[in-house]
Image 1 (cartoon, rainbow, N blue to C red):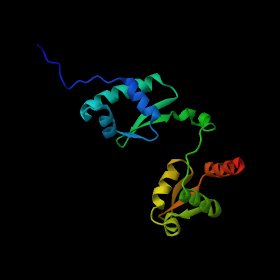
Image 2 (image 1 turned 90 degrees about the horizontal axis):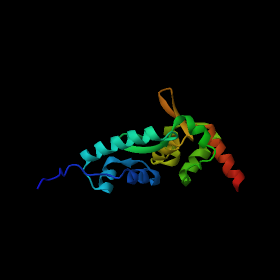
Image 3 (image 1 turned 30 degrees about the vertical axis):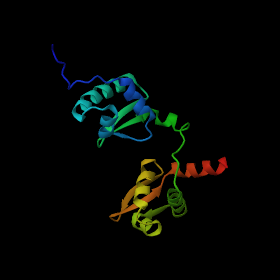
Image 4 (image 1 turned 60 degrees about the vertical axis):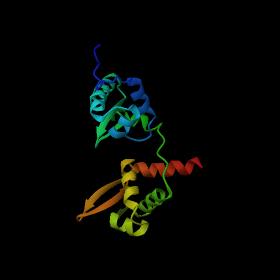
Length: 162
């Protein structure tokens, strides 16, 4: 009686597609390993094959890996087309206040934002930057948060929806 190698476990790629499609946030390698109940080394082999096959077969979306997390994202050349149908992420109260503050002042040093909104402002600034509402530039060796036109459009769109 011959034994099959226990190191090779078959993974249904449909499960991986469903996971990436339904996940509201990036998925770590550790999380995928737990969901699929396989060890990380075996997962690496399967996930690299899956990502290559997925990206080859899909033209508008792709899966990318950054800092140990996998993202299902829109291909850059289609961002402008889907921007009109995408809803911006929900903002918490502090994020709304930060946007309002920057709308009024046009820009602010990060240190000043910390003094106004407290130490957790950096987490909110990071999210607002990732979502494209603000940009961070360096002036006089200090970081400055600037409101982007997308945020102004978001504010105006939210006002007119009421």
